[in-house]
Image (cartoon, rainbow, N blue to C red; front, top):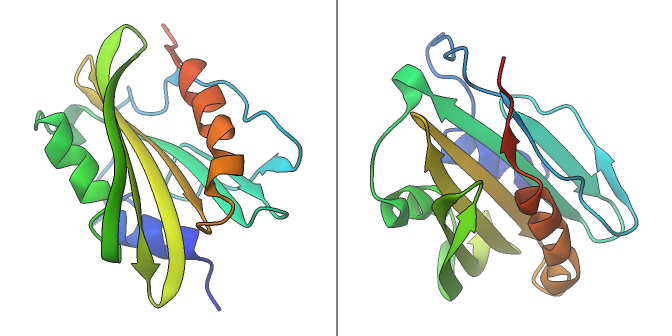
Length: 162
């Protein structure tokens, strides 16, 4: 069975479409490392960063869309697009926060994807013609245990200047 992370990435539009070349700004940022035991980095595929925690069956990814792929839409619209593939869903939490000195939005949603129960937390932030997405995907019973790893990653955000 395909892991829900890859299904989620495919539905969220994280993979490059129709041969588009990402702008040179994409991926030019640093993050914190997910704390807690069991997190290992993986091949990010179409994202910029990916981690997996086998014990929690949780995934965490970060992605940027810059330049021609940047969309200056309101944060609630952007976060809802990330969470759109979840069916039978219930919003659990939403709040504004600061990431890298900019306003950001966090939303947590529980539901199913292809019949698999999941809980997803997404943080979206825009800065310098880039949109940054930080997403945690976990079974509902492991979400709260995995959530500090999302905050570790987000709180370590800084843009690389080259």
